[in-house]
Length: 107
Image 1 (tube, helix red, strand yellow):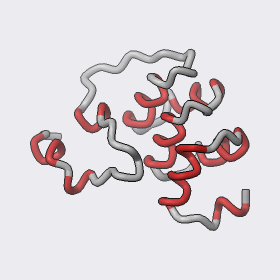
Image 2: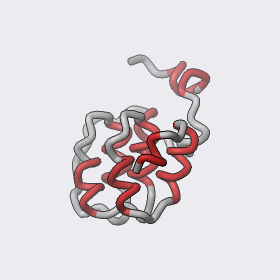
Image 3: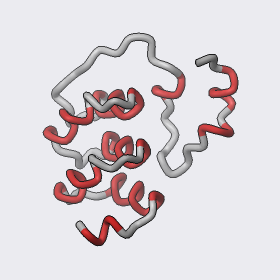
């Protein structure tokens, strides 16, 4: 996994979005970047074991995406989901600072 540790966030999101290598996905599922973990949560190749952990991710956006992944068997009920949590934008395109929905929402 040393090769992954040398990649930037954009490259890691790309790998997390498309990889079917469970070792890579397992390693990246512990990445501090929400976007990397969210990409794994949305990846249809992510294993049930990884999704089970991501369903309990401290970032609601990641946890929710893991809960709606078709491979997930560990459903979780979320109360009062924000627009940000429900955002369907690809992790490559997320720009929360410039998002009109964020500007309309009161946190």
